[in-house]
Amino acid sequence: MARRPDRPAADNPHMTGRPSARTGGSSGRTGRPSGREPGRSGWTRRRVLTVGLTPVALAAAGAVGVELISRGVLPGKLALDTLDGACSVPSPPLRLAPPGPSSSGTFSSAARRRTVGYTIAYPPGHRAGDELPLVIMLHGYGGNHASALVGMTPAQALALRVDGRPPAAMAMVTVDGGNGYWNPHPGDDPMAMVIGELIPLCQRLGLGRPPRPVATMGISMGGYGALLLAEKYPRLITAAAAISPAIWTSYAQARDANVGAYASAAAFAANDAVTHAPALARVPVRVAAGYNDPFYPGVRALARALPAGAIVDLGKGCHTDAFFVAQQPPSLAFLARHLARLPAQSASVTAARSRPAPRTAVSLRPAEPRHREQRPLVRSPVQQVAPALGEDDV
Image (cartoon, rainbow, N blue to C red; front, side, top):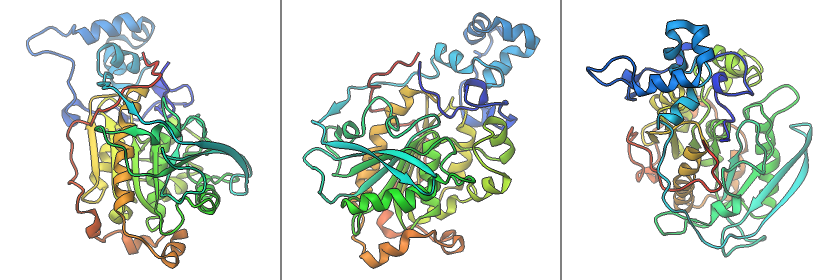
């Protein structure tokens, strides 16, 4: 079965309630096919598949059952999208260099009040003790440091060759963040753990230590976390890449889908990735999501709020492993490109980046010249450049 860590309730056993009307989407607004051919009867292939797929749901819902399933209000949308081809993405050959070394361990986290595991991986040709830029890869809902990436290990991810070329050398760390969506909760603060414990641990090893930069990346819940950390610490996180980020546009919507995502309405407001997107004015950002992802409406709202220069790739796909794996190589290449091009920072400047910048200081500033190579916000089809390693998606 494909991993579906952060999907709204209709297709996610980890979540309760049902998505609000905002998650339903509209084919007119999103550009998705409606499933009906002009001049044909209402019994399209999609409807036939739905009837065969969910007879119990249809019996309970009556004449509107097909539409509710298609919109994701009733269970079965993911299976329907899979059968109907909406989740299919190309899988070109994946090329890897011999992976570099990696090591795993644990540390006692005061911020999370528990022991957490982590993995540090090095790129090909490097080893422990080398000083390198650092990518913090955040896992999705139900995951941990061993499952932050899909279908590959951190060492394999760093050995990927995109368009036949190896990326600039960088290290990667993964860590156990729990299921609290990487934002502070009473008695468990994964954000403080990353900023105040994980990054210093890596810096003592020469990774992400000034003048070498730090970037964030994540999938689903981890994608939201990658953006959130960059918004909160724009002077520390120098680039961010989010694959199918779990973005809600209201606290009610988040609470209905996952009651544990935020501690309160105030916590949602303080950690709303859409509201605080202007803080990313100085941070290169790449976001990718599929048209049939339940979080697509939230990603669209985020895309409208992101500063000019952010890269938003939207195209065919769902909230599935196939889409996640296809987006891992271009996301890593994006981070490597920016980490390699960033100018060196002095130790004193970087040391001052350990606390969030005042929102008023960054919300309206234009992007720095170093980001000129970024293209404007686009809504072109997503780049599909990798297959699913070990993919067992339906």
